[in-house]
Amino acid sequence: MKKKIAFVVQRYGLEVNGGSELSCRLIAEKLSQHYEVEILTTKALDYVTWENHYTEDIEKINGITVRRFKTDFPRESKVFNKINEQVFTKPQKNIYDELEWMKAQGPASFELIEYIQKSQNQYHKIIFFTYLYFTTFFGLPQAAEKAILVPTAHDEPYIYFSMFKPLFHLPQSIVFLTEEEKQFVHKTFNNQYINNVVAGVGVDVPDKEINIHAFKDKFKVNDDFILYVGRIDESKGCKELFDYYLEYKKKEPDAPKLLLMGKSVIDIPKHPDIIPLGFVSDEEKFAAMKIAKILMMPSKFESLSMVVLESLYYETPVLVNGHCDVLVGHCDRGNAGLYYTDYNEFEFCLNVMLKNNDLRGKMGTSGKEYVIKYFDWEIIINKFIACIDRENT
Image (cartoon, rainbow, N blue to C red; front, side):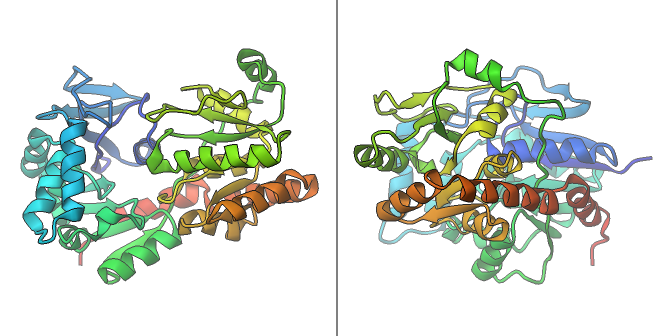
């Protein structure tokens, strides 16, 4: 009989394409070949409001049982923004202020936390995805003896809240996505003694040939372009990307267009060469990656970036934010891209990459070799299996 394990994650579904949620689903589906897997999650779909969207308490997705629990209240942006501001500006901030922030951060589901507490003995191990949310913060302590934490941590203001210090000392094992994440967490929390591995996430791409012509015909894309894929949000560096790109176009009016793929939560500048395509299919995304000159990743806060790895697999080099150690690590280890920390570096790097086809080709080839070597599913799943089967000491 297979051992039974559970994953706890804030959202789950085929239509949920956030980085940590997608990683969770991919890993859960791979591990379902070795274990009986269940997903413990909320009924929320929208990460902005956490409003209950799904109606079923239990459903099957790709053969995996998904248990959904209602969120107790939606997140109101104005209220959350006010609490978020206060927690950073209040002179005498304390743990209660941080807990109030966590309650507002959500998704608050007391039914889910109670289920973990009462039903933990059903599971051999429980894997918690992402340190930042209510589901992990309150759920993991209920089952610490069985807990594996996949923190998806990076250097952001929230991780320095005092309430997170105990959390990173509770799990039996920690699975990091990159070496940079491991070094950062150990430096921040001094928890090197906890069993840990660097596993990452495998890169899933279609076996079939990508239909580039269908993509071009559908979106009327006939010119060269650079590409951004992901949530179009200021927290992802998109506002700075727009500012930098528009400044660059003043100096290089014939520069390639900027194509955007993903849901927008900020205003996109009205410019003929900034083209938002909205939400697209995976095949359309991969087609764009395959023919883009460069993939842009302007975020300062990434714990892995599946988009970067997918782009490298298709031999398209990347230009990334140099303030993010994880993204810089991909570029350096893979010899697969450049990085910038201000506009002048952005302009210089973009010029070098766009005006040197041979360099882009070599970066692309090297990038694919890097992804195949370090992000193979068999290696990654074996690392998870070692953590799951490990006996507590």
